[in-house]
Amino acid sequence: MVDAAVLEKLEAGYAKLAASDSKSLLKKYLTKEVFDNLKTKKTPSFGSSLLDVIQSGLENHDSGVGIYAPDAEAYSVFAELFDPIIEDYHGGFKKTDKHPPKDWGDVDTLGNLDPAGEYIISTRVRCGRSLEGYPFNPCLTEAQYKEMEEKVSSTLSGLEGELKGQFYPLTGMTKEVQQKLIDDHFLFKEGDRFLQAANACRFWPTGRGIYHNDAKTFLVWCNEEDHLRIISMQMGGDLGQVYRRLVTAVNDIEKRIPFSHDDRLGFLTFCPTNLGTTVRASVHIKVPKLAADKAKLEEVASKYNLQVRGTRGEHTEAEGGVYDISNKRRMGLTEYDAVKEMNDGIAELIKLESSL
Image (cartoon, rainbow, N blue to C red; front, side, top):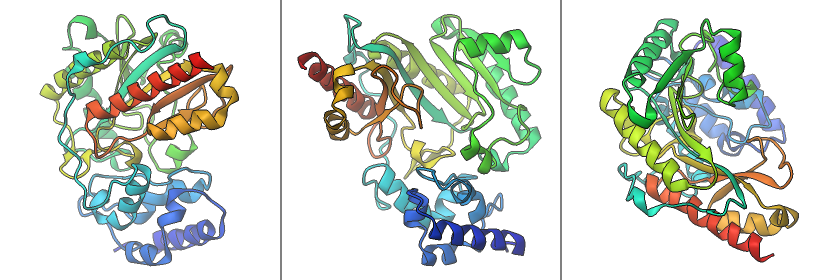
């Protein structure tokens, strides 16, 4: 049973949210009826309540989404709230839909989007993975954080060839190493207020770490927002090369660590926006002419399901006509199709920019 203090917090938080002008998906779909149905439920293994799911959105009315899954079971126990939000965010992925099996496609069909190097500053493709048998951040114990870091660092130290590198635990990190990682834009900071409110930053920095290869084109974040964020990146527009590196790495890691996967939702993550393929393929691209014609930019973006962010990512402005543009859809399509959608959209944007 959910205790009285939690219920009280839920009721108060809900009343505030309902009265607010929040644009979050949480506010849109948490009707009084859904709220009343879910407020006394708990997940069987970890005892997560509705408060664990929605507290970030209750505290931050400016959230875009506002909910997280404290553990994998939350997706089914609180499906009445998760399903419509997932459908809305992932472009019509209905509760009767099933995410297709993993398929990286023919990795050799992707190439360089900008061989002359006129528009694309850098390219990156990342995916998220959760380790089977562990809950997500809010339910992890300090011991589990340590255990996971141990597993991850020993697995990654077995990587070879281009992926060979070093693991840097955040615990006990020297100022020099810290500064070096900040300069490389590799270091992640303790979560922002959205993650803090979701209880995703407990026991910081225990169990958190960063791995990167010698060439600094391959990066793994351990226990930042997700158990694992696996990232491939480099300067310029060679999406094919970036994608192939990621696929090789994920396949290699997967042989050693079992990942959390669901038949309907695909790969499971802490935030519902990352479910399915979990793949975000993005470029930093300089399109000053389109930047002056925001409507045109948005039109192409929505045609190819692209998300346009400012230069420094979410909640920022574009500096000097430089945008961070990525695929928005991660569910109901294969890994290859998610990346291909970004590929085709960026090709179209470059064509437009050069014709203006």
